[in-house]
Image (cartoon, rainbow, N blue to C red; front, side, top):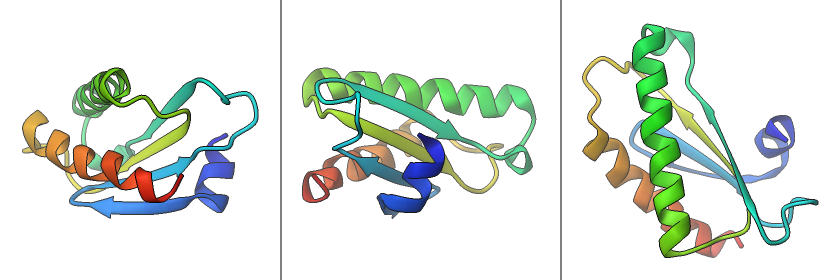
Length: 103
């Protein structure tokens, strides 16, 4: 799934996040799946896991409000040292709403 999303899906970027979205992935007709890529260069495992938890929670909440079937791949760039949840959420909201035009 991850390789397919990186190679075939459209990507949108906002701040330190890039979102790859594919609405028509086989097996996810009425459901969604999320994957999160945070490179080791971003920081220690504790910080990378914290960012992953924040993004997973944001995706879960947005799916409750505006459900969208398909596969989401969120890629984080840069340093995780001074990133806040609010900062990431604001960028994630922009990206999630931009998927309307990709569907």
